[in-house]
Length: 243
Length: 256
Image (tube, rainbow over all chains, first blue to last red; front, side, top):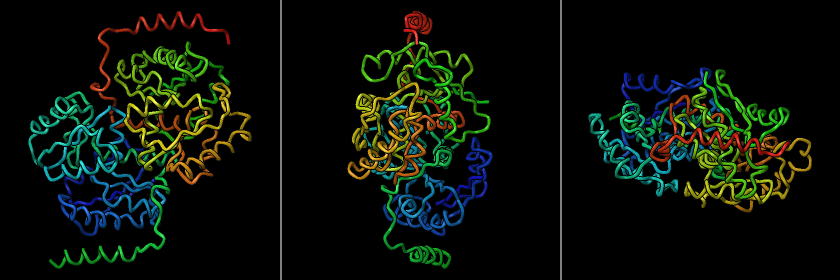
């Protein structure tokens, strides 16, 4: 009975979370059990390097005890690699995030991908992530769709990604955009990747093949300081509660 | 009941086919998944030269071009050259999974650079095309060979003591000298060495055949398949002609 810890970095209302949980579980092995855990404190969105730093630490702390806690893998419910490299340096179980793994999967389906970012502020972050993975040449473009925009608006941006920018594959840049996937794929006849369901399936892939990240790529610390990390987040949570 | 066609790149006896089928034991798929291993009826004797690669493409395509009509939900190709994958993707609307491309991309989810372990130098060109198409050649730390001629029928059966330690030593050099974070077995014909290597090496070792079966399952579950933009359809239906070529070629094959 493989157990996956799902870390949710951003606060979500219950109805939206319930819908996402249902969509995510579709297609998974009936044996796989998902446990959802929110971070202790952190930003609502990542629009700057400061938000990114806080997200990094929040996700890192939330997943730190996953292996000791008996989980078989960790997944992140956000299109972000924040905190995942740090977790890989501490854990011997797979840590899979929508982000790098989504872009690499896109390249199994076509030569170039485009990312539909949720909001203009997210465009820079996605470009940096593609660059960090060495995939700038394969990233045709990153275009923004504002949250709450009409489907027609999202479709227009996605169409430009394909027809003007040369993308073969569209990646939805936020796990909250999942409702767009089917409609866009049908309208454009290109694969449209919903990042979180793919992330869960990728975790299942690693588990069923006995694979996880390389310790050569993610060596552990000489002197780990988990108590310091926990204190940082406890401080953040106490500060947020006191406000 | 999802059905996956696995195309095996050489005609072979049932006994040898069983060794190819044994790859399925290395991955736990959903209980409803069915794999069917089908050898080609026409093709080269080995995959070691451009002569072979040219024949290989038609060989694989001939074996799988009706897969969708036959009711398969995906096709896997049992060779790291990915021969026939691009052509089949242009003809079929079901996922077509070649291990070369998919193993490289999976490796990069686990580390920054990978090495490919091969039996002999003649296999090195198999990966050139895939790495060039992906634009990821710089992520390949090295391709190391142990200088042993492969047997694409009997695989490594009976050669474990001779070959497995050589593979282990070459892989360690990939890690310690070349900077590889991940090792790829350079051929599905090496799968019998996977457990031995995975237990002894300090890095992940990717077993490409089983990876493709699981990625076929993933593609089926997520309803994701290759982009038509990247793999445009042919303007004419060439299937009947390809079948006729396969008929003629099969009749001309040397007796086994």
